[in-house]
Image (cartoon, one colour):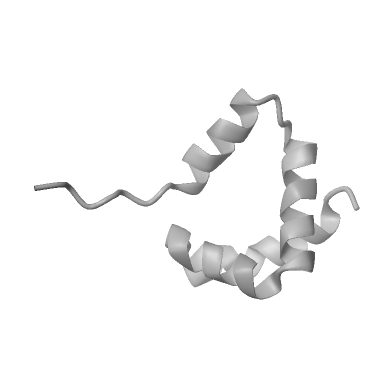
Length: 68
């Protein structure tokens, strides 16, 4: 019997990006592009990550501050 797959946390995702050399600025840029180019996919991804609504409400303001 196989175990159900664990969801990836934001911290795990960020750790993988950093292992590839992606710094905070580039990660913010990636996030801004994802949010702008695929808003429904972005929202779905946040839900899949299990982010609480309080945290997702902060994300657009942070992403607007990142590199455009």
